[in-house]
Length: 152
Image 1: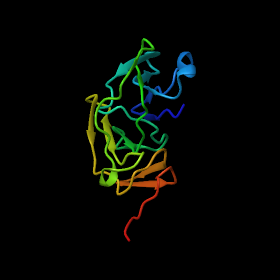
Image 2 (image 1 turned 180 degrees about the vertical axis):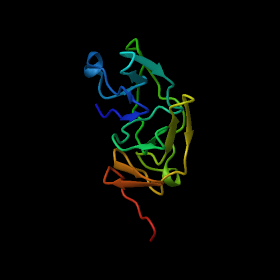
Image 3 (image 1 turned 90 degrees about the vertical axis):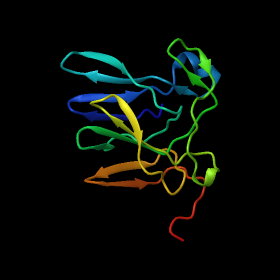
């Protein structure tokens, strides 16, 4: 459910949002991030986000055939680790003016170094926007914002 997926350098990167075994427990974050290498025919675990967050766009969210950009998001009440154990959310999600249900974070994952960084925050909170990166611009369409005023 709502997994961000992107292809970079001939590999497929993605995350896991919900496990059927926990469907009765409600919607929650799956903490796992993965990369699939078709040449090797195997999946490998990669670094977790610095903040438990999710509901990022999928598709044209890469820059320079190296970086994956994860925009906005939402922090569920619980995080599921691989053993199906639930834990509390971790990290502090960014929120425009410090309020709202959704996030204004912009995480940038470097596929070469397996590290997360951040870009400038969004001028509003946004959950699950459609996103397209074209050259050095990010275009966001829709999503759940909870309301905002941008540029007056």
